[in-house]
Image (cartoon, rainbow, N blue to C red; front, top):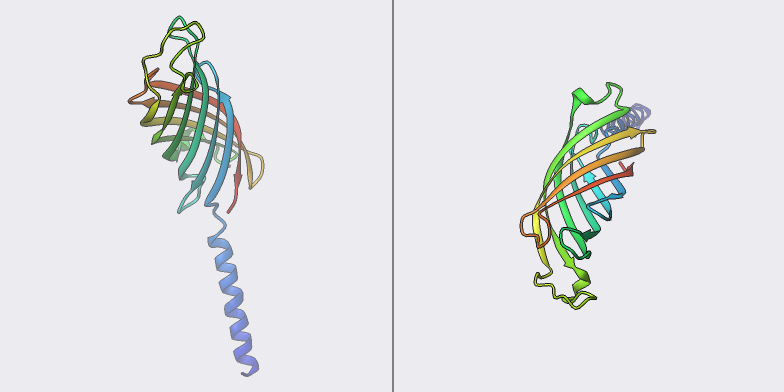
Length: 187
């Protein structure tokens, strides 16, 4: 191999690395975690999000929600634990986001399925009253608003509101979640 071929090969390699670095400059994978309030209790939410484009504009999200609530619509305070897997799509609202991408607002919608556990699985309350509803699988959907405050290229502070709809819940079909969290961009 002569010097001219080596120079051309190195130039080609340099151009390939240069072009690849720009094409991968758009973040595509992120993880986030939230803690917050949910219907007379507290809840956590952990998510994994990915996008085929710039993740600041739109993304698909898979998450795990855990809510530790109290049912207060009766004369008894009954513990209700809700665990669900959530799958959704989020889109940036450009008219409510800053032009420099420091503050972003996303709206999302999706589906969910999970488990609702009433009174820790016990059918009898401490005073002897019986619970006639059953624990069970839940399914439904959610709508969400998420605000992002970017601290740097990899880390953001988040605020989130979710409204869950559990079509077959034994306690309350609508449950909300308000929380704060952090997001880390992986790639």
